[in-house]
Amino acid sequence: MKTFKPTTKSRRGMSVISFREKLTASEPHKALTHGGKRHVGRNSQGRITVRHKGAGHKKLFRDVDFTYDKFDIPAVVETVEYDPFRTGFIGLVCYADGERRYVLLPQSVKVGSVLITSEKAPKKAGNRLPLSKIPVGTFVYNIELKPRGGAKMARSAGNYAEVVAHDAGYAHLKLPSTEVRMVSDQAWASIGEVSNEENRLVKIGKAGRSRWMGIRPTVRGTAMNPVDHPYGGGEGRQGRGRRRAVTLWGKPVGKGQKSRRPKKYSNPWILSRRKVGKKRDTV
Image 1 (tube, helix red, strand yellow):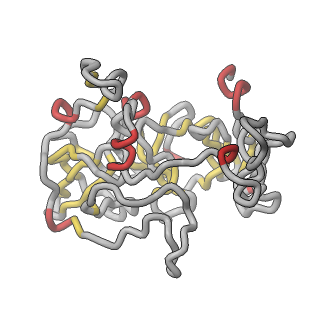
Image 2: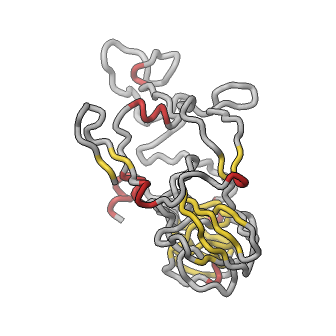
Image 3: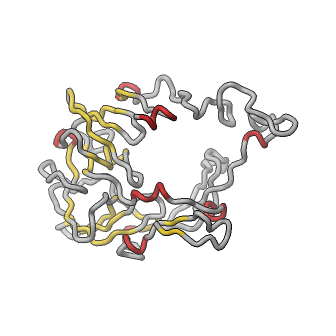
């Protein structure tokens, strides 16, 4: 991490990741990049469906491989690179047949490391195997929900899931949220933890830096009028005025309240619900 002298109020406490010490390339592989329209939280009608998004620095999209459909072909890591669309580092790998792809890198993997996707792959960081071949207690990332469905879970910087059991054709995974979920033993996962674990320690420092990242300001509900938010109105500063914390649309949120749909499709696969708040800190 890099910190700054408090030359201004915004500099005090600000921190950034020392990319120069970790990255090996400053420009991406052109054949695996492309532009695209940034929807900034709006749907096809132009209406805002996700608040607090907009503007921000222009980004070039890197085509990262999450399908891993090249089996039993070793690949050499050529670069460690930054991806503006994700928190973990990516790497350009060159397969033995000459094809190059971007992949999400785990911790401890460097330029020159050899990765492979195979049922017989060694149990080392970056290699990819079916969950049935991965022993209990191993940390994994880039996890598929369905066999050959592409990596979906544990893809953020520093994240991983732990294999806690194998039973009746399913692997039991403890996810970063503390939820324990069943996933088919035939689904694939990569060994290790996602790179750039220091990302969670970064302090934005000032409002302008959030705007560069495409994050627009958030207005407190208590500062609004009653027509605009359930917390709005009142003379002077007011309390919430209701027992449960809610969103702008009146739906329960935060503070340990259950906001999950009762009939969500994935309910049968959850063995233990995630812990929130103080309970999570003590476990």
